[in-house]
Length: 173
Image (cartoon, rainbow, N blue to C red; front, side, top):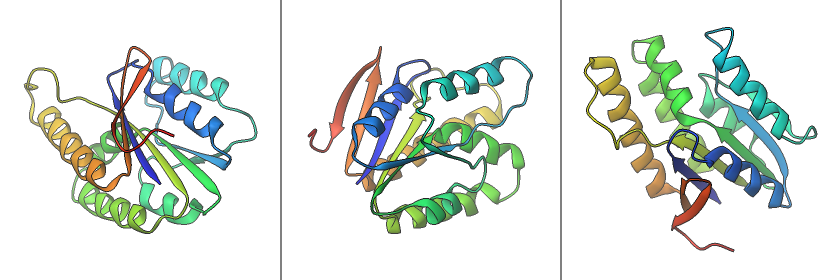
């Protein structure tokens, strides 16, 4: 089963993904996409996520090659928890060139063939004003298009607001 968890900043979406992973009977591999570009805020966020995770979960860092990480680590008895797609998107857009197009295609291909359970966390960014600069507008456009494609392919899609998950697609068991 593949699941997409969407929500705004600090909505509780990561905690919901972690809860789903804990409740599963699967071995868990956490795929982190964050890169540290500063010495304070992002480092503190990453540490907060580390402290919440059970120590027995495997950790894979995949800031750019997410499709490759899925191909390498997906197993029938394993849950992959990917946090988060918008950080991955940011990393690729900052790389420039066609890297995002290539990595997006590889991600979708990997998901199509991934055994086991894949839970993806992402920020919904399309509910605000249209950004002023071109890179920000491209980010919002690409995130929205990625979310639509993933939602169509996932068996379950969640929306999280104020720590309250709502299932938008699929059955809640």
